Length: 445
Image 1: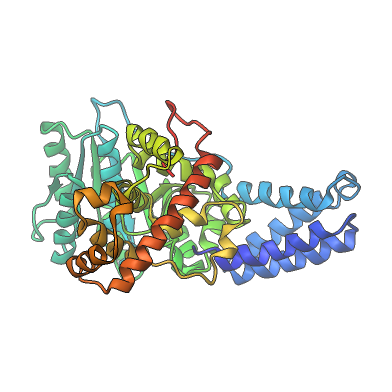
Image 2: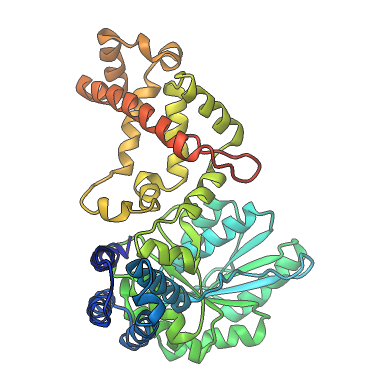
């Protein structure tokens, strides 16, 4: 994740604080110097950092903290609380108009920020919630952008309104709203044109659309990997067009992540969503408290549970849990687990949400695409072999390897991995399976 480096540095600072039985004012000052350096290196806006350090320091040197039973832990708690305040203590959502009215969301941003993909992801997510969205292609300057929106719309099962590249964007937008009214689409996403940089023509075009169409929300998509440039872009768009919120994309990339900690403080506008990958479910609602916990290495079990709840079939989960208890877990179940893990963003994404795992994963390469080989191996087995792992002997392994197009050594490794995974999932099930969630939902591993 973008915050891996920052997270590691902050955890080192906190480790030193926790190791001290009592804290002096000098200890706090030294710790705050290291926190300040870590935040600046993560490309957090320097004015934001200055105010943040000042606020935390004032609270941390209070009598109750320095003489408390666990002063180090109390300082960490203050850092987390102030980090949440920095990113906006409230979670902001897109509030839709009544279903008989049309909610219009204007997506804007620079080229390459992921605006078109984000529009389709949002439309797909709202469709899954029972809404009737419509995607509208307003980038008349790049025919490829129109085609991209049509492809993405097809992927998420959402219709796309286009009038080609010969009409003015404002006229297409007006026609799209009429089309939506006739076809009972109560949520419209306007995918506007991007530019390589903020320019006057772009701003005028967006202003004209807002003057002629009743835009409910103006959402700006910015690339987290551009750091402070993302904050400057957000400020510029807000001053010239007016934005209601930000979608921060590519937060899964190797970026410093300072934009997430700066945008709210600099622009006053909330982050609504963060993009953590290419899949539809990789666009997550932004929760400031959960993000602060991730950054501080405390994990994000809430989001992990929500992903599991969305991805996992409840009946299958119960059945799998019972099988694990009775040691009846087979290759069919393992195949289901791989599919469900894929829906949840892969093993790397899942592990990064567990408390304390972020720093441990730093030098570990987990190839989520590697799951395709185990799938091929399982699919090369007979139904009897999948249901009864004990049947598989050397001659069967040779046949399975030939069917999957892999070496027999890979089949041997997979069989060993299966046994290890079985043990691990049994432990995981014991640790988390007892915690029910929404209608008795349990983790399937």
